Image (spheres, rainbow, N blue to C red):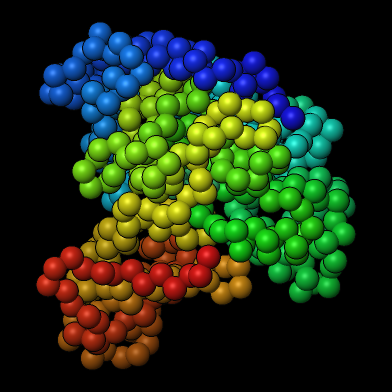
Length: 433
Ligand code: DLL
């Protein structure tokens, strides 16, 4: 099933003509409305008129997360604040989040792209969607919510947490679809089973799962334990939120990028050269229709490859393969994006700590756990156990308060962690996703 038959099945030539026209428009607009783009275009010696063919996008400079941070909070917006109707935010590389804004039309576009995603998953207005993506600054909750309403489906705005209540609602309301992170889908299955509930016999038929990396192995486990079809959805708040790319129920192999709204490229993260078609690289997106927060050649940090072969669903849109990793050190822990540098910033605020730490990430059942091991100074270490425990709790609370992620903190003796002369390897990720 296809939500927007016309635009999702455009012949390649027509699609590329549309992309070129929109690219020219967005380049023109950012050059004249966003100081940052004027500056970086000028530095690269390129003007919007230089975009004559689609390939000319390569003349344009990349945008990085750091640029968003440097222009925190609203410096990259291309419209006045009075035209912004919504703000969201996600994790930045250091203390501050990256902030994104939407005009009314942006929200409409996003809702339609989310509706496309649900339809690609085989949903219609007759479905009940249990939306367990978090509502709030995170784009998952409201993004999926508006998309479900746009489709005309019935949406249950669950948000995250309160797992027992979620299970009760899954039993009582009989939703046919669930949207949440893949690890939360597994966690629901686990909890339900523990409660003695037959999670296979719920009314659920489809899962629209994303916001964190997962694998075919996880897909199989989710599908078996919940008796559903589990499909992958991709997005990032900077680009819009969920609904940038969606796996279709027919193909179940790669996620269609909604290319009438985004241009996708894959680059070598080291050289920044575009990689040959079909090879793995970092995903780079240019937004073609966003009004409030257009982004030119945004480096997502996500590793994937482009799949240009036709898909049996009939969409002519390029697919991206399941995200296979990151080009930077960003972690996603229980759906929360975290950079080691952010944890370091929290640690640096605490007196008596040494700048040596280690992050141990594991998965127990379906849940991610984070242990922060940090060295304390000689004098702090000789304190009473109770004092140390109090400090551990305080750091854990700070991490939770600032970054939204739960961690256990273990203070260790000076010089007991590995010290590095070159690039420190601070993260030990033992999750076998
Ligand atoms: O995670 C938006 C979203 C919400 C997508 C709900 C899908 C469903 P951020 O919080 O800004 O936005 O995080 C974006 O999450 O750069 C990827 O690293 C990761 N990510 C998102 N979807 C997937 C996926 C939302 N399907 C970052 N597979 C991205 C792997 C994903 N990683």
